Length: 77
Image (cartoon, rainbow, N blue to C red; front, side, top):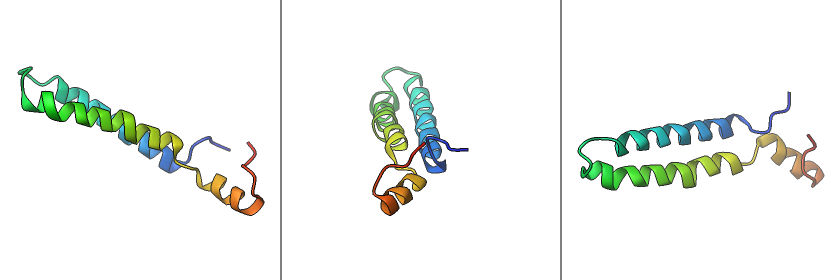
């Protein structure tokens, strides 16, 4: 079975989703003018959406790297 992503990719995407959930929870903590709601939560959400999830999508799959080194061409699917 040839999957588009490897184990590392799925792990990074799952980590990003978990961080986004934690960021949403921190954002919803009362009171609204809480330091965590205003300062920490936006950074956690930005890190999850702008770094971790795209890294999980763009991280190269090991099989693709090996086939590119051997043949010099991208792996066929």
